[in-house]
Length: 158
Length: 158
Image (tube, rainbow over all chains, first blue to last red; front, side, top):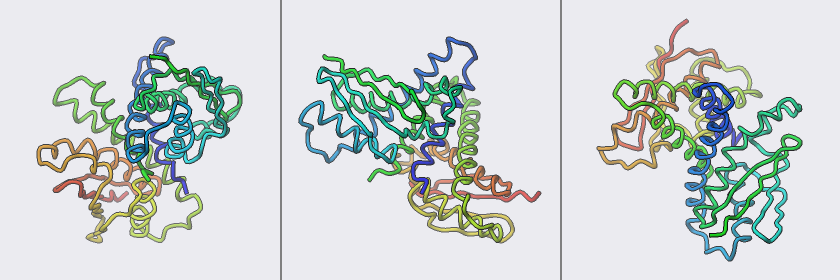
């Protein structure tokens, strides 16, 4: 019961803290998002290191993505990604039909504008995990109907 | 495996973030500790609310403390408090012989000075949980040999 609750509550507090401690204003929003994304990046790096310490080497990029969708997602969100799609040219879309960090928000349309700050940390989380597995990427998120959520990963060829 | 890891890593990042974003200087340390304590307080409030939503009413103060040592601690740290003592006059000492948020720190004496910032959040966590159960308290922590740790709770009679 409530296994992921400490993480969820702490995550919410971090968002509140960062938004409250910053000056108000339009330009600040971008900076706050970046701060959350960076925090997620470092958490993702640490987590993936711990999760893969006894794993065999991954076969390819798709193999890595499957690990992120399954083991990594379960570790953080206590469920797997519901759907993974790819165009086989470096774009992956991970769909979570009940994303935990959004599930405490009301689904009303008027709250949709608040979604980005609840997604920034997780975008960073994925980017950090991939980065430590040698995959450079850009990760964005979009919500159409809460709490469903899509993360798009664009691989940056090196 | 690594069930509490997301929480641990996020907790570490929050400490880093708060210490990095503050100005350096002796006086700032107290403020950072207070920020972490406050964050813990609110997380504790939220968590205890969720954990006790189907519980029967607690018999007395000791009953509340036992719940904190067992259910609450297990929810956050995946283990119970190892020892609970009280003087039956409003002071409780909770001992955790392997406190998770310290277990990633080296046990060397030179790191002992860093312990307070790893304990502040949890002091707030306990204070917040008790507060929502109607018990006003002051919570402090001390470490003698890492990662063992004692939390002292002084009940404030109202």
